[in-house]
Length: 201
Image (tube, rainbow, N blue to C red; front, side):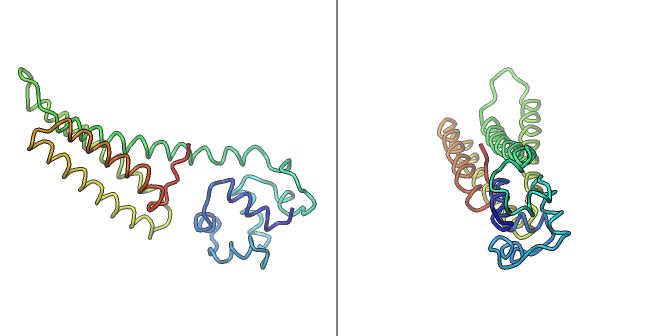
């Protein structure tokens, strides 16, 4: 297997886009594309960086006669672990924020201190919202990060509108369903398609 084929295969196994891999390697996406197409060869320092990024030896990368995956250390598989953990934390944060918003709109039972309950609801909702917003830091591309911030702000405004509708109309069950549907669309459709978040299983 030639070097360009190995780079392409390793990048795909790591679940990275060309932009993500190029940024980690401190090269342009066009340079990485040329390496993968075989129209250009990476320099020696780039070979070392490729090895570190994908968890393989430089011998594996440079040995064209190696056709198997035996030269790929188990590290390549564990490279995905942080991405899987990060993806799951993003999922949990989004679900936690929607759940906290649902709890916040529910009526307060009689005989309970409304100020204390209101404070608790506010603290939980604020904590979940901050956690969800902090997930933006995982996006390394500044343009994508700015786009994600705008999408997430729009999502929060839509969720807030749905919550206020349920609260003032006292349609709590309808509001809960509405919040769940909006959260599901955001999590399963918007995140992977527009926000560069591959919600790995």
